[in-house]
Picture 1 (cartoon, one colour):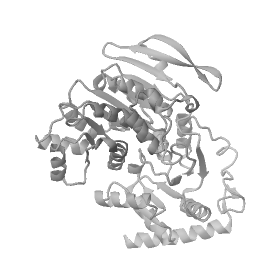
Picture 2 (cartoon, rainbow, N blue to C red):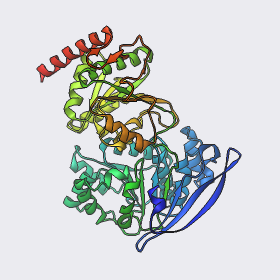
Picture 3 (cartoon, rainbow, N blue to C red):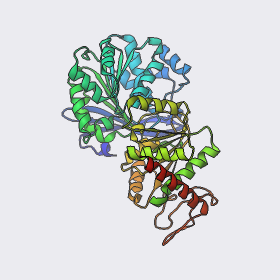
Picture 4 (tube, helix red, strand yellow):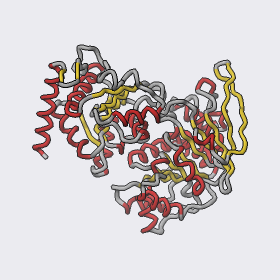
Amino acid sequence: MLLRNHPATVNATHEDVRLDNKIVYFSVIFVVTPTLNISLRFGGRSGSEMGDFSSLGLSDWLVKQCKQLGINKPTPVQQNCMPAILEGRDCMGCAKTGSGKTAAFVLPVLQKLSEEPYGIFCLVLTPTRELAYQIAEQFRVLGKPLGLRDCIIVGGMDMVSQALELSNKPHVVVATPGRLADHIRSSNTFSMSKIQFLIMDEADRLLEQGCTDFTKDLEVIMGILPAKRQTLLFSATLTDTLQELKSIAMNKPFFWESTSETRTVEELDQRYILTPEKVKDAYLVHLIQTFTDEHDDWSIIIFTNTCKNCQILTMMLREFNFPTISLHSMMKQKQRFANLSKFKASVYKILIATDVAARGLDIPTVQVVINHNTPGLPKIYIHRVGRTARAGRNGVSITLVTQYDIHLVHSIEEQTGESHQDTINVKTKMFHECFPTSSPLYFMQMSSGETHLNAARKTLQHTQHAVQRVSHRR
């Protein structure tokens, strides 16, 4: 772990906890720098050792609200981060996708808000519009007994109505940086000088050095926030942005990161299918047919790398009469929300999406995630496959790997800690028997020629015809 070797580490102690009647250890490391005093905790207690929410210091009304919603016990990220937040400390939480990070900051904020419900109390920044709406919904549901007022500030919506909402001093503002910065530059009808909490969800995306637009917008936003506030940063891939704390979090920041060896949850069944580029769409069609035939209540998200591919795949799958809808950044905002709502309601069972859907979205019916292209960065893979197997549910992820993507798979394995040498071994075989030998996905040979079962060839021909029809329409 990089942080364990930090040159500023001055003291390390060990505390023991009881876990399944065994004593295990985790390190509590105190790091001191000239501008930063941060305590780091790796791991902590597992779910089997968790108490209830009242043991974390939550008020009775919040504990009752959690129980009514079926949230009975805190997850590890909640167990470890919520006490520090309630103590008034800044916090960084890094845990797997689907591990309850949103509730880890929503619940403490609601408790503090109930004690002082005045003005714009909390600002939440997210990298995507869809995630902003989802976080706002969590605030509404958990904060219903308070009569919580929230405001969502994202692009693609009317700025005048948004400015009016801001002037009415909502308790919680959930925003994307670009649109909020636009309001700050163009309006003086609202003030954020009394904000108590600044929260960055998917903080690694917001703080990426290469994301210049976010960086400029964040500078504008930080300029109007009070220095005396709590700052909370959460993500599934957060460690690379630790140094950003020097300028963002100064209030005895507490860092917690799951000690799990992998960055994906155990309930996720991860598979790769190695396929030549030219027959990849045949594999995709057969995969979807297999899942829809066997599980009529399952929903599937298919990730692709460009808006153009997203549109083409959507139209192609509709040619096969699959209930398909798309989501990408080139769509108008109202259409994006409408499509996402239809997918959540199971009006459409298949969502073709770019990475605008890869972060934070929690849709319980999603059982399968398919990567139509192998992600270029391991952290993109982590966020994509994290759309399934959430909150203890099981899920399957399948990545279609072409002959040009082997090095990307190796990078993903290194980052996630998941080795799939039993699934892909490019030196000894080209295809893993992901399915029975009767399946069109099982290739008997792929060397000098292309020998595959007739069913796969037939599927490929139909797929190519569909693609041609889609291309002619465009």
